[in-house]
Amino acid sequence: MEWYLCGSKQHQHHKIANQRSQRIGHSVPKRCFETFGTKIMTKDFSYEPFDNLVASLREDDLIKQADILHHRLHVVAWTTRSELIQELAERLKIIQKQEYNRLSEASKSHFLTAVTMIKRVIPDFDEDE
Image (cartoon, rainbow, N blue to C red; front, side):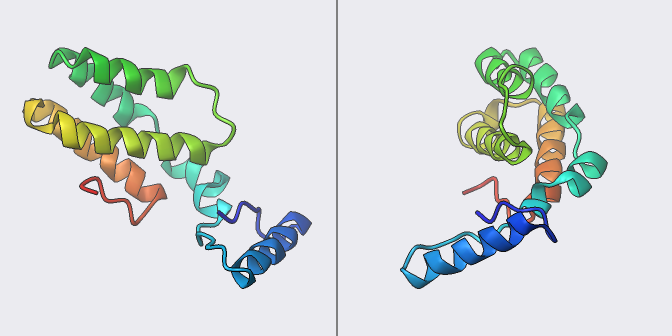
């Protein structure tokens, strides 16, 4: 991934490194740190949909999924916000595959709200993959 803050020396360094990687045959994802950076994260991203989903999962007796999601949100110390977003996206995919049929209507609504939040940051996120 291209992890840089646009306009900085670090941006130029990583851009050159990514170009070198491409020349020698390594694939480099085209997601810029700005996608996950402070502009989007502070204004558009909220834990609230995920906390609501956790509460709703507990009401549906899906305690394990609720505990894992809560742990990822509030216990793990993430190095970057993008790591958190990626992990939340993966947890949503697991819930979709393993538990979606067991969710109440309220939980399904909270799940879709959480997916919408992820799609604000990762527009090409597909929970069905």
